[in-house]
Each structure stands twice: as structure tokens, then as C-alpha cells.
Length: 502
Image (cartoon, rainbow, N blue to C red; front, side, top):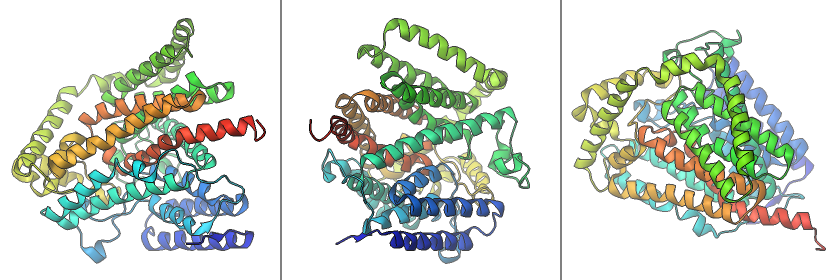
């Protein structure tokens, strides 16, 4: 198919179409959110102006998409057509319209003076890790007790694959830098907001904290004063930061540009403080572990001397102490508080998941079908899920599920799904390590940091399921595309630095 070349006027037309799509979505699905809708429309309008003026729609749309993923809300707007299925129903997220627009740019030649798409691996090699899991989910959906529910989660795996494939086919150094820069900005914004929520004891939404909206009951009101950003829950924010903060620390240690290193240091400090302010036990401990691993790698690679490492650790500890002192008492009380109850809650949920898996060992009970038989194996857990389901419409959030992503995959997709899911995670980690060994400087530091962050996140998911939530799930697709193309980006940057005549 021949792409349509973007001219100034076609960019304006594309902007008008984008405005119409976003406006229609707002009018149809978000009439109840008031000021939030106005803010969303204003942001969308600013993005459209930026696309038109800059002439780089893919960069703008990708940045907007990555940022929108951190607004962790699910809108069940299809109940009128499909009937209500509670948290198992079909929903959309604010990032979805942006993904549609991003994919639509494939029909236009929007490269302009940009470089052609680059790729280190073949398309098949990049897609291989997700395809077995997608295949198992499809088959498990057909065999599920509620295929309609299962199809809703299988669609999420399809979107992961589509996003990963599109990014690989269209990745340029400019798009790569845009994604990395956006993730850095997101860490700063989410961390600053989370720390403010704790300092101001802000159980309300951000707008209510600023006096711009009326406080309403939501999931945030049921949470002890903990950092959560715009992700709705501290146990979603902290694991998200756990993946990406070590990457920023890697850039600190490996970057050759002092300004880049200082910027990455600021991201590391803020992100670490936010994880601490989330009062989430496992992410806090595992983040410290991941940062130590990155430092040890830097020592091994001789980009960090033992003396500088010791001095830097002292300085970093001092900075973190200053940042975290105002919330230290509240955090330590939370960490040493209801630990036994937290362990028992997760153990009971895990037992229920294993009991369901024993009934459906090969393909599981079906994606998104855990709650079909939860009551039979764990009546108390089923009651808690039913009570939490009230937040589906009140706070636009899905009810929680098994607090162990591996047991969740066993119960819902069986041994085949569990094995293919592990294959996806392991291949992402292997790719990140390989990318680090094939690059140098800042990109190498980012890749080593991603490797440590992913490893820590995998361990943390044994007591959590946040990686299966939309904000982290689709961010993993973006991250996979970044590490897959990192060697090609590094090579392109090196060639540009040497110049065509060298």
C-alpha cells in the first residue's frame, strides 16, 4: 500500500480528524467527569496543535499514549450493548484512542526529514516471545466457562502484540528518544504527585486537593495515606516505578554527558522516594536490591570506581534521607504494621488459585474467568472481590485478583499459559541484557538498568498482579520495543556522530 505524504494542509486535516475522534469519545463516554473532561479536551487540543506545528505526529502521539497509560482508569462503556459483567466486562482506557490514531499514521508518509525505520532483529524474532502466550489465550478462551469474559482479556494480549509489532516496524532514533524521554518525565511527574499526596495527606483526587473539584468517594478514600500518583493505588504505582527507576540509575552511571547524568540522577532520586512513599514493602526492598545490582554491574564494567561508588552511595543516601524524612514515620509504621494480615490474605488467594488450577490443569479456567469458581474454593475471597467491584463504576477501576501473577496465570491459562507467559518475561530480560552488551554509554546504562528492574519486578510479582494491569502491561510492550531496537539506535547514533565522510 502506498502511503499518503503528509503536507502542511494534510497535517491540518489529520489534526481536525483527530480532534473529532477525541471529541466524539469525550462526548459519548465521559460526560460525567466534568472538569476532568475539559482538561482532557484541552490536552488533546494542545497535542493536535503540536502535531500540526511540529510535523511529527508519531512522536507526539506515542508520547501522549505512554503518558495516558499512567492514568489507570477503565471505562465500561459497552454495558448497554453487551450487558453488565462487572469487572470482567469489556472496557476501554484513555490511551486506546491515542493508540488508534498512532496506528492510523501508518497510512500516511509522516517521516518528512526523519530517518527510515530501523531494526536490529527481524519482525518474526521480535514477535516470537508474545505469540505462544497469545495462542494459548485464544485456545483457552474457546474452552472457558465464560468465553465472553475470556475474550475481553485475550483482546488485551492482542493489543500488546499489535503495539509491539507497530513500534518495531516504525521505530526511528527520534521515536526511540521520544519514548525514553516520555518515560523519564512520567517518573518525575508521578513521583512528585505521589510524594505530595503523602505530604498533604491527600486522600482526595488531585483536582479535589487543589480545590477545583468536589471530593467524591473513590478507591483512594479507602487507602491509607500512601503515594499512588494517577494510577489509583500505591501497589500499582510502586511496581511500575520498580521497572523503570533502575534504568535511570543505569544512565547515571554509564552516561558520558554530565547533563544527562544529572537529569537521570534527579529521576532516580524522585522515583526512589516515591516508591518509599508508596509504603509498599516488596517494591521498596527490591528497588534497593536492583539499584545495588546496577552499581555492581557498573563496577564490573569499570565505569564506576569503588571510591566513587562509596562516596556516591553516601551522597545518594543523604539526598534520599532529606527527601523522605517528612514521611519517614508514617512509612515505617505502615511497613511494620499489618504484615501478618497481608501475608495471610495473599496465601488464601494463592490457595484458591491453585485449587482452581488443579481442576483445569492444561488450559486453565480461561482468561478473566477466575471469579467464576472463586466462591466455591474461597467464599471469603469472593465476597471481598464482590465488595471491591463497587469501585468499577465509582472509581473506574477493575476489582483486584490473585496477588501472585504466576498463580493467576496458572489458574486462568493453565500450564501452557503459565509456561508461555514465563517465556515472554524471560525473553524480555534476555533481550535487555543482550542489548546492554551490544551498546555503550547512556544506552548501555539504560539497558542494564532495565535488566535489573525487570528482574526485580519479576520477583515482586510473586506477591502482586500489577504487571497484568493496563498501565504496566502495555508499558512492557513499549519497553520490549525499545530494548529490541536499542542496538540499532546506538549504531545509528554512532554513524551520525562520525558523519557521512568518516
